[in-house]
Length: 213
Image 1 (cartoon, rainbow, N blue to C red):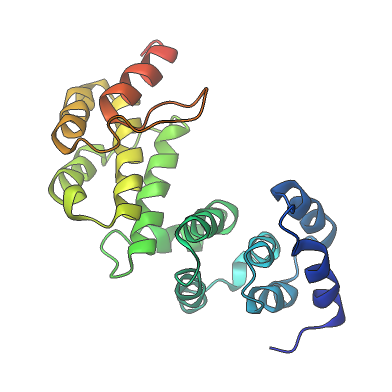
Image 2 (cartoon, rainbow, N blue to C red):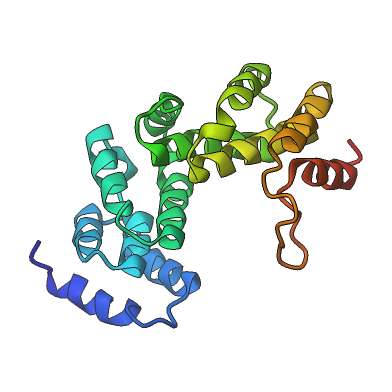
């Protein structure tokens, strides 16, 4: 795609390794919404440009076909960049419109692992915000059957969802803890100061105690 002068100018501002998310948000705030510019920036394949593109996309134009193309492009990034981009897309665009939320809710059994990650991460985020959902028992049954054989990027999101179910829904707490003990996922993994361990027995104990639940 031939880049406009505006896109080229923006690229010169954000291709330095010192670029921060705050810088991208400042630029996006000035631009507001510009889907054409977003697609130009996206076509550059540059990580920061794609982060900025996500912020200025028009969510009304994000059809499943467009999303599939974005996801296919994201797969070519390094592991760290890939996960940042897919989670950024979910948080800044896909959860902002009823139409795209309906799409997310249909991705539980998607053949694409990044779309499955979005599904499970979305379920976890709902519960993280304290929104108890009626299908937690059903989701736990699926997680118990599938988590150990899932792709690592999906496992993380399933674990995240299980953790928040265990925190907010006491009737499922022992079940969630038992799942963590069985899988051993993230046991002993070091976390940054102030962050909660991802190992489910520790995560649930710490986060439920914080909230006196």
